[in-house]
Length: 380
Ligand SMILES: Cc1cc2nc3c(=O)[nH]c(=O)nc-3n(C[C@H](O)[C@H](O)[C@H](O)COP(=O)(O)OP(=O)(O)OC[C@H]3O[C@@H](n4cnc5c(N)ncnc54)[C@H](O)[C@@H]3O)c2cc1C
Image (cartoon, rainbow, N blue to C red; front, side, top):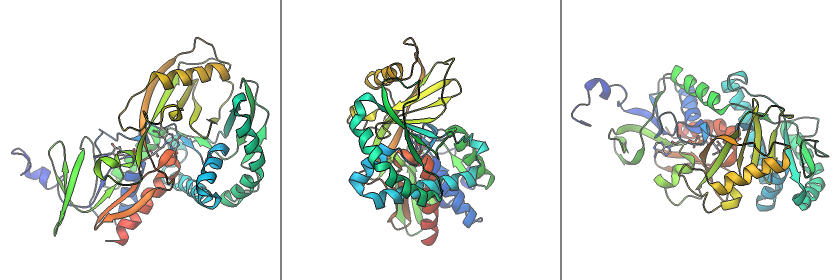
């Protein structure tokens, strides 16, 4: 039926009609599938992805379990107002609890190492604004986290941070291993009987009275009752017109460094630049603000402009040998928009989406997936 060689056995297993088909095997899509199956154990659920196991940000991010650095929060407050920003912060915190409950801290190497926002000497204005705003931010975070200690504390720069005027220490923040997080989620989904298929790029779909026929570039098509898109930064290829753009983010990993003196999640300049340890290596990434136009793409790749900016940043500020080189690099695609809140909605009858997770999908992805599942179930 699909090609002359498709067997009856394939037609009655992997290609059999599903109750729910999810496009995207990242953190959002897999959590959607897990929540659907938990609520409806008898349902037949298939997840397809164009990559062999996923080809998006979930396997390529920096692994920060965070709720926002002070300059990032202040910039968001300026554009969206404090109430909306605190709603997003709450979602990040709830999302992290949800992820931990589902995966477990140990399985994804989650370490509550704390965070630090660094202020280089040329950021005096931002530093002064942050110092003024910290009491209000701390008050708001106490309510969200239900903690009686401050989330943010300003201090002099630590000795290893060169050419800095100050830093803000961030209490509740951690780092994890995104590959282990995703492997655990995929294992959990498969254990529940969810079928995850890689190497299948969805090209379109059409609804008829019997359900939805979903086509792929490599040949097989699928039939489903309900379709969920968890395609994040790649969504404009399938549905144009949403407030959603791809945003590439480049990541670099250094060679081993013998005397690394710190272990935090580091943020600079509204979260555009970030760094953390992986053993004796440093991961540094971002700097998308240097070339916003060039980085508005879903194509993988790295550029010399960003690579050398990040290398210079390390050499100038981190007391590191001028001979240090990057040993490895990659990029990932985020989905961003003017609005920071994710889009979770029914697009048309029986077709749903949970996309636009911005730079916070580790924190919110599992909760967003769960919310998509509940939306799909409500309309069943
Ligand atoms: C470099 C980088 C660093 C980041 N660092 C952090 C961080 O430290 N902390 C944090 O909270 N967030 C971070 N993020 C953001 C976070 O990774 C994302 O928000 C999150 O992974 C989004 O998950 P998702 O499942 O919605 O999308 P994705 O993981 O992108 O998954 C979408 C999936 O859909 C598939 N797909 C798309 N189109 C099709 C199609 N037509 N057919 C079939 N499959 C398709 C893709 O292959 C992909 O696997 C970072 C992102 C990047 C790129």
